[in-house]
Amino acid sequence: MAEETLPGARRGWKSIEEETDYWIPEADVIGKIPKDLHGTLLRNGPGVNSVYGTQLKHPIDGDGMVCALSFVDGRVHFRSRFVSTQSRRDESRAGALIYPGQMGTRRERGIVALACDAFLTFVRGPTSQMFEYRNPSNTSVFYWGGKILTTYETSLPHCLDPYTLTTLGPDDLGGKLRLGVMAAHFRFDTLQKPIKLCCFGIQPHLTRPADIHFYEFDDKWNCVNVEHSVEGLNYAHDFLLLPHYYVVHMTPFVKVTMSQAWKWKLGLSSPGEDMKYYPDLPSRFVFIPRPNHPDPRAAIISVDADPFHIFHFGTGYQQGSDVFFTAVCLGRQFNMTFDEQIALSNISIAPGRVYKFHVNLSTRTCVGLQADSASVEFPTVNPYRHGQKSGQYSYLMANDRKNENLPYRDVVKFDFYGLQRQVWSSHGVIGEPVFAPRNTFVRSSSSDDDDGYVLVQLYDPAVHRTEFVVLDARRVNDGPIARIRLKHHIPYGFHGSFTSECFVRPLPRPGILDTAATLFLSAKL
Ligand SMILES: [Fe+2]
Image 1 (cartoon, helix red, strand yellow):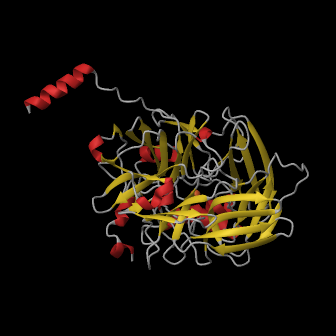
Image 2: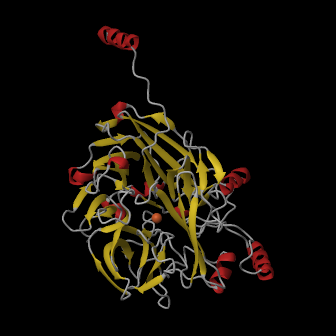
Image 3: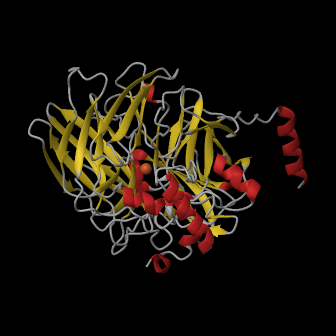
């Protein structure tokens, strides 16, 4: 039981109302911040676990709070702001929860209100907009082309001012997001010059196959996109980027039917609560040709796989007809129960495991084998090695301890080629590790996949405080080279990213008069 192994871990989801903006005192940094770590760690996650007295059923329903940790000349600045979404503003005015959550959070309603809802649903049909789900914009955050964007996979992203984290509003990226949605996960394609931001959105339908659109943006937001409808593809959270294909997993854990739509509309269930194994649904990898595919007539390729659910992919590459990649797989018992009120899914029963896959596109065959023993999720990789054979390392949020699956306490560095596995066992509960290249990716060569730092948000239940940890990506075993301790906690987060851009001014260096005054005061004391 989690409470026995790490008392107080549940408090890591506790709400925080304050938005903060300060330089971290040097006294709160243990170790030394590397001078070649320059840029901004961005993280997103729910800032609250209740809304005006209504307890959230699941953290995924919580309003997004973005944190920016800026590294400037060996000093660190911290800033946090809530994403000011329409649902958050409306509920602020009302002083009550208005919008239900996709994971099952809803207002308690009397029998009369339920009857009215049922009648309106019957009249309008289950696809009507009788109510909207909340858009907490809490799942990921990244910087590209002058914008900070926060995401939630069933809604438009929100654009933030990079310098203040003030919310500027929903952003359809110049009208390109025609489906009105953008998934949380994106990839950089560094094989193209200039490099491209690749992202996607998926929209399921009750009466026809889902639409899935992929976009490739340059840093001026010029876009090349492809649009498909794929039978049986009800959901996709992440994708693998190969030089000529996007790869998504067709999960047997998400069903979209008329009867479910009725239940969701009536508040009897929700998409998150209905996420479970449906034996009648296929499990397949779907290879969708990119706009640069050498064969303009190339078609979508689907390859059957064993039944599991995949949220996240790791590294991958293609060699001829053979594609090799990693992913975190969840077994048939997986569902989205808020396990022990700590984990986002029932990982005490159905932990995530790293699998290595080999798909042959000619024979349409797939072999997948478990490749690591730890309980894991949220694999991150060097963001500038997607789809390349030189991208071999994944850094995983893990529990690598005997007879434990949760909470996540360890960082596992997984090597696709099996040459080195490293683990750092932390003193708290960790979030997603984020890879920050040393200096910038421009200087990288093909053999420096792990030349950089792994940045980890860590909650210490013993003192109810959050810290950020800097690991040398080549020496994860050695533990932190720096610990940056906040004076407060911030709730466990979801996804983040690192940009070499900085949006705070460096602290002024002490002038000669300041130095003389300090020496004088020191002498007097
Ligand atoms: Fe994710």
